[in-house]
Length: 315
Image (tube, rainbow, N blue to C red; front, side):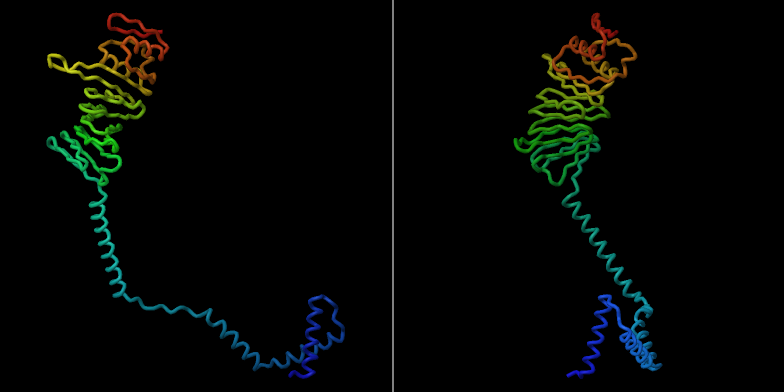
């Protein structure tokens, strides 16, 4: 049990603390006692105590100033680790290549020296003409049967009402459910000729063209141009009778439009030089040469005069 003296001292210290917090004024007597206390305390802190205190402080701070010790490198171990890592990377790379080749890399078929038949998993047969290349994804046949073609080929597509067959060629695509057709690509000239069934041909900037047997889609070698031509054999089997069924242009120069119409209508078109580079967007379906020339003249803001097979456009 604490003595009465210690209790009085504790009570005195607590009272001073209360006054320090509350900001009350300390009496002169209390100040005198505090000064005596301070003097007695400082005397007790002799040199021995100061030395011990200093050593304790320095000992606590010592950990913050210790320099890390560098360990000698273990070169044989590092060499072993690097070698093992390199071997693992090599195995993963080889395994990845084999996995990609086996399961993901598309199959590519080429026909360098002559025609080549390619039998697809859905039963379709593709005859690649000389110089053609066919690319087929590993997923073929999926819900949509898609292949990519460079060059010319004849397709005999297995019928399927649920799974369309699409051939992506250079700038255009052909969509079918089951049919026989030929795709030709020579420079800028693109064409699809249908022998059996139905196909839809899509080409940038032009309406979708739907072909029936003995019909041909072509762009005449002009970008954003599409035409459907009927190919009917002559009675004496000496050749084919062609008929232009539809013709579409999307932002094509009038000079190119005139060249196509002259060739396929067997006519001659005369027009002002300043009209040559004007852009034409038009869709001629089922019209005669006279009707289509009237429409062109209207688009250009010109009048058309016909004499024999010569059409003259002027202001």
